[in-house]
Each structure stands twice: as structure tokens, then as C-alpha cells.
Image (cartoon, rainbow, N blue to C red; front, side, top):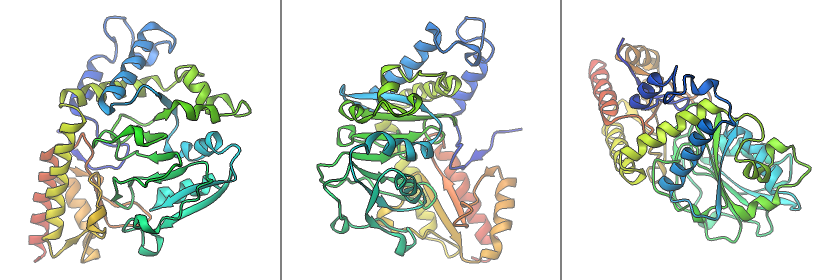
Length: 360
């Protein structure tokens, strides 16, 4: 069976070249006679994989020397609690921007550790936009300011940062490696692997070294950022195979010309898909055009009775996982780095044929 175009928001599609290389190395990684899944995480072989992944992250994202790169077990949702547990000690408040489902979940977890100052919220606009910077009420005494720069479910993305003396902490799960960013503007960024980095199981954390001093010895060691940094992300057995595949994805991204080159492709993919939505009488995108995500494109059908038929026929055409998140409905196409232009074009072609069939 031919491979399909997978528009899942995560676990997301991986580059086919990466999967083929992993397939070749499944039983015997580089002549050692065993799979990476069987290796000791303390072995020189796996340590070389971890070091390679960290170096590739550093090169691709131009990470300054005063930052640590960690691979933490779990998902971004784990970090919703782990971040305030590490960074809020000694502070009464933390500041959070509320732009969608994931922001709201992060706020809920942070409230277990400190008083949350919600600097601004787009809830009243059904999370279809981002509050203007002039509306943000940042508490200067907060431990940090937390933002989610791409709301995967809602399809809202922004790339600006406020001018503030507070350390900025950002969930970049759907943005990471898709566009160039200035790491030095952040105190900590984190990203669940299963979108643009690799398979589920690990979270990439890039943290400024001075922030490590906030981690208290009273924290569980496996949650302590300082201890994770001191132990090369290996306080216990890390998700070795997830890190191995992440390293292959990072190698693939290098071969594409790096982040600057893949960003050009991502801009074009999003342009084509939004152009289709904006020119259609059947489909529409509900997001403020100024804050449309390049990675996650939600859309709705004017006649919602056609939803089920659309999804069934899309699947039959080899276009998978287009249903919107259960909390918002509609459709959603996630077009991360591994989604080729051909996949977006195939989706647009199908959408055109479907609307023509129904008289639109």
C-alpha cells in the first residue's frame, strides 16, 4: 500500500527518508549488532547519538553558549507543571498569556504553584486572535511570562514578543524548527517532539543557564532542570529511540538546507492552502488573518452535514487525519516540516473536486 499524506497534529508525519533510514538500522545500528532500542543509554554509542542531537539543535537554532539543551521525558503537558515547579520558587505570581486550549491547560497547572496573573486573553473572541500587545498587563514581580506561540488546536500563531524584563518562557511545540527564531529573547523554550522533531516520548527544552539556579533540591530529581542539565538529560533512562529518531529528523532538516530553507517551503504551503480557503464558497478559516498558523490550518464547511462525507472521501483519497480536534470540530490540516508541497497540493485538488461535486 502506498504511503498516505498524514495531516495529523501529532503524532505527526515523519520524513519518509528518516523512516527508511531507521528501517535499515532497526536490527543493527552502524555495525554494533543491535538496535538502538536495545542499547544501554550509558554506552558510548548512545551517548554519541544524544550528543549529535544536541549539537544539531544548537546549530539549526543558533543556540547561544549560555543555554543548556535537554531532552526531557514526557510531553509538553508535563512541562506545564514542571516549569512552575522549577522557576516559580520564591515568587508569589507567574504571568501567562491566554490564547487557546493549551494556554488554558498551562494556566491550570501553574495555579497549583503560584498565583497566576493572566496578562490578556482572547477567550471572548473564541480564541480566534491574539490580544494586542497594548492590552497585556504584565506583573513585573512575576517569576516569568509564559506564552504559547502556536495554539495547535485553534490554529493561532504569533511571532512577536513583548519588551519586558521578565524571563520569557514559551511553548513552541508546533513552531519549533519551522521558522527562524531568536533564542536569546527567551529564558526557556520547550517543544513536544511529536510535531517537528520526531516521535512522541520526549520534550526538547532549551533553557538559559542562569535559570537553572531556580531549581530547588526539594524537587524530585527527574523533574529538576538543574539536575537534568548536570546529568546530560540522563538522571534515569531517557527515551532512547525517540532521541535517536529526533537526531535523524534533525539530520534530514540539515540536508534540506536548515531552518531558513524549510521556512520558505512552509510559507508557500500555508499560502496555497489559505488561498484555497479564502477563495471558496464551501470552506472557510475562522482565524484572524494576522494570526493564522503556518503549521495548523483549521477550516469549516459551510454545510456541516457534509463533514462526514468529506472525511470519508478524503481518507479514500489517501488524505488522512483531517478531522478537527474534538473540542472545536470542523477540519484541521497540520502541515509540519515533513509534509511536502505535493501533499498540500493533493489536499487542495481534493477540496476543489469535492466542492464542485456539491455545487459550490
